[in-house]
Image 1 (tube, helix red, strand yellow):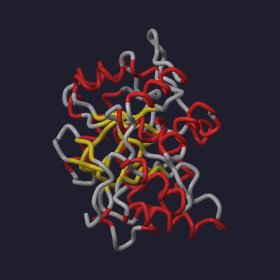
Image 2: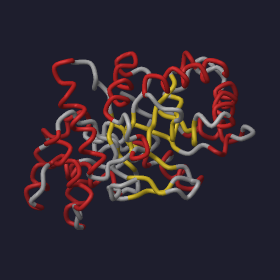
Image 3: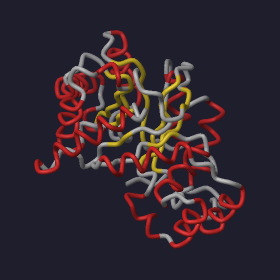
Image 4: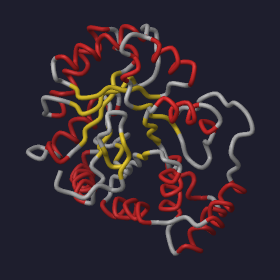
Length: 281
């Protein structure tokens, strides 16, 4: 990869990937914004935000097609992630869904393939599909999304289940429930945690407390929110469809949050005081 990574975080394999990547939820759905969204994705990779996360669900494949267009001829610059819908996640369905995603993305392999959330199919079925894809060299790693501690315990007890690379979950200043049990469990098990919606789909930006911390640091609220997630040892994949927002997001990697800023954020957004069911968007 030609760009310097935007901070790094290690996968269980030891491979280092960008800690700050790019999400694509809702991208590719408005033809009038297509060129700007493609420019934003390309800029992000040039700035080191080389993890690009998408899913077959996003725009019924439109986001994958957008990503494929953005990185045609530049595939090796990107750590590419996509997801299988729960309804497709039996053994054969997982393989077929991945193959459809590969066609839309214009690539022969994914770097990481995730179960989007748990559905009706047993985890054994999805794991068998992931194993088939690994053997066919259509994916390099597999992981999950929106699985809580009990699900992760069940998964890792299955033959081969301990090869899970990541759990991608909703995590930000206003959604800290995973700090009670899931985040410690993943750290102990060596599973990399990735935060989606790390700015709560921009709702966090309205917080007066967050704004005050940002002003004290000469930063923006979005940069502080992202820097806070990264400071927890969690990767983040904020979505941005504009180059200006991509540049702003990238600034979070270089932002140091001093103890007084962290204390102010804890006061405004308290950590959990007990177990909390895993939240989803």
